[in-house]
Amino acid sequence: MASGMAARSGRGPDGSWETVVARPHPRLRPGVISYRGIRLALDGPRSRLETPIGAATLLLGFEGSVRIARPGRPPTTLESVYSGLNTTAAVGEHGGRIFGIEILLTPWAAFTLFGASQYELTNRPVDPDELPRPAGRGGGAGVAELAAALAALPAWADRFRLLDDVLAHWTQAGPPSSARVVRAWSLLRRSGGAVPVARLADEVGWSVRQLENRFREQIGLGPKAAARVLRLQRARRLLASGRSAAETAALCGFYDQAHLSGEFRAMTGCTPREFAAARGAVAATRSGPPGADRMTGEATSLVLSPNDSALFSKTGRIA
Image (cartoon, rainbow, N blue to C red; front, side, top):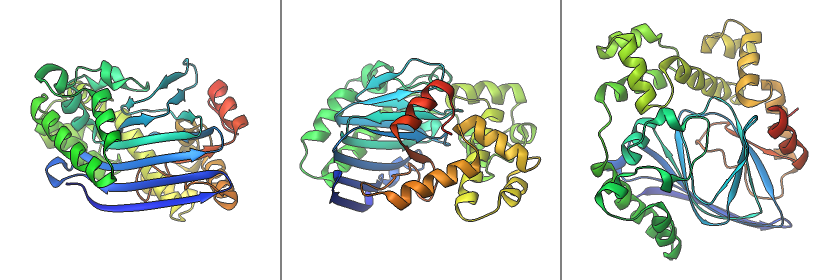
């Protein structure tokens, strides 16, 4: 079953909250990265900026819904949400009450679980029950039924155990991901997006065109676009650890500090300085739940004020 559970909970003037993080069963790793159980009962709506990360996200909603907005797109409101790789940030908003489990997946594992070309799922949230998941082809519960079954269980450990079993079944029933895609993604991720596309293709024995086509199918982005996401993810991690912008730019392969700032702004809606300042301001005044970054040790999310949320939805900028 899922292991290494870490729980946090609290109650304050804004309401109560609980988060529980667990690792999936070893048979699901490394494709299934993590589970995070969430239960919020807050006094009003909350908004959060979600930056692009090198993972797909499946939210199984038990109670409450999430309204997701991206610049230039109409907002979408869903109870359960699947989001593949993204190259731009999004704002997720809820009414204050949320109960569910968030699952992080490698993109190639998501391809197997849902049996859908990941290229069609980039930069847009979708209802996972609309995807041709293995359960829909070979029997078993759909996403809505799974969410209801998980919600009915009495403890997080029971929920994670059931999730392990269902995801294992879906993985066995789904189309296998290419071993070459898995290797190429692993090389690209470990390098922080630094491996050139031509070298990546040579490493796995494909032409550049073959690599690009298979990446779009099973990763969602071409290798060059995927490298942008991974490079910026590494830059956020280094900046959060205290590295200077100039040092981070050099380590991550940006031309200079201005290039880093431009990429950061294009993909998150703010500059590195604005992002760090906003996270610091939120941390200094927080009386509610923790920020709940999606990846452990990563600066992936930013709690927004209502004004910031409305501004980002219209312009793609939070400052």
